Image 1 (cartoon, rainbow, N blue to C red):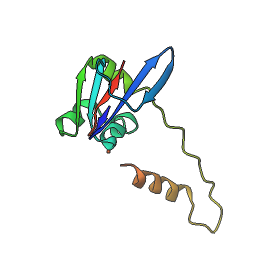
Image 2 (cartoon, one colour; image 1 turned 180 degrees about the vertical axis):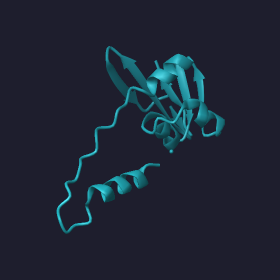
Image 3 (cartoon, one colour; image 1 turned 135 degrees about the horizontal axis):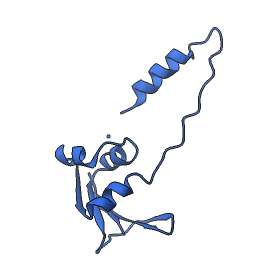
Image 4 (cartoon, rainbow, N blue to C red; image 1 turned 45 degrees about the vertical axis):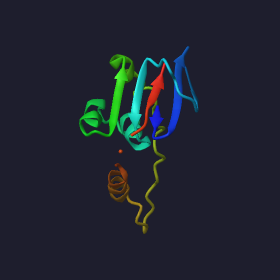
Length: 111
């Protein structure tokens, strides 16, 4: 991954993901863009092709590994808040707040 002047190497091996602040000279995949673009792909599930078309993320190298890489990171479920009578935290308000909260250039190298 390269985000401006910063480079990160992410390795996926044996069911583990490790990251280091270093350039990966021979990466299988390189993502170039901003941290927000990478987050949109990984956590927002925005297709890589859409980010590339928008010009905010570039992907080079093994395309199938790139597509697989962005599926490796799953956010934990959000904690639910119970509605109590007399409060604004109703189920409908919580759903609206959750919907309103949803919203995503650097190089990313994986081996």
